[in-house]
Length: 173
Image 1 (cartoon, rainbow, N blue to C red):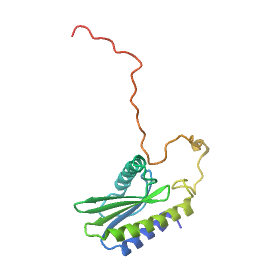
Image 2: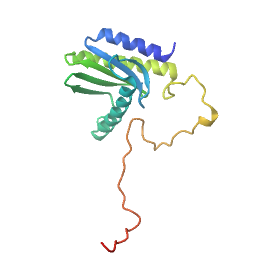
Image 3: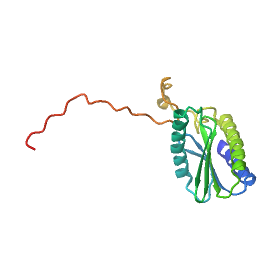
């Protein structure tokens, strides 16, 4: 059975366990949809926004020295968006109505994230991507990134530098 089918089954079971849950999405940390149960939203757009929010959340936890990312909760006037880590390569995003039991949402979201992490690790292996069962062509094989590469989900930091040349003075103005 494919990982997408197993993850979708898990998302559907989650919907039955959490009253007022209106949608759920499992995606890779770089914004590719694994499975979704979001009837009123565009899953690809939600996955891309989840990846962006995940990058900011990683930066915030690093800047505040709070360890590894675990979860993110956003409350709007119409309800909640909750994002949970699902291992190192996946993330779970839940959409819920305004009067949801937030404690129950967190409890079930964390459990579901852990199960999705196990499913992804079992089916595709850690860090190998969505299509790990397909052999990569030789021209696409790339050497491992250097140890100084930034972790997935973090944003690069630009350090301003002085220009190497002096601008010419303008005459005639």
